Length: 103
Image (cartoon, rainbow, N blue to C red; front, side, top):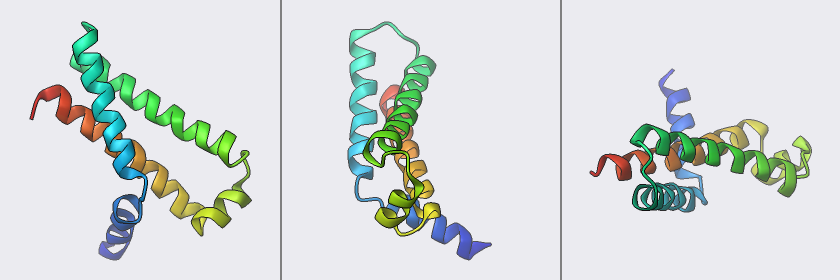
């Protein structure tokens, strides 16, 4: 159990080379929405979550042509790609939550 959790966290955050940019995009998107709109904090986090998810779908459909074989070659395994994508979404959402609540 602990080995699985350690491997999951390692794949989601430590091997995730583009995670920083997703975190930055989530934080900046939340900051811009806070400054330029009158949306509630929950709605801002929902918008960032939805945009992060849709960006991962875009990456799969456009950049990888919707082919799991291309994804498997690029990331090593399909499981690693799923964890990497989940890590991107989690980082963007966590950073947007931090920006919205003002820590």
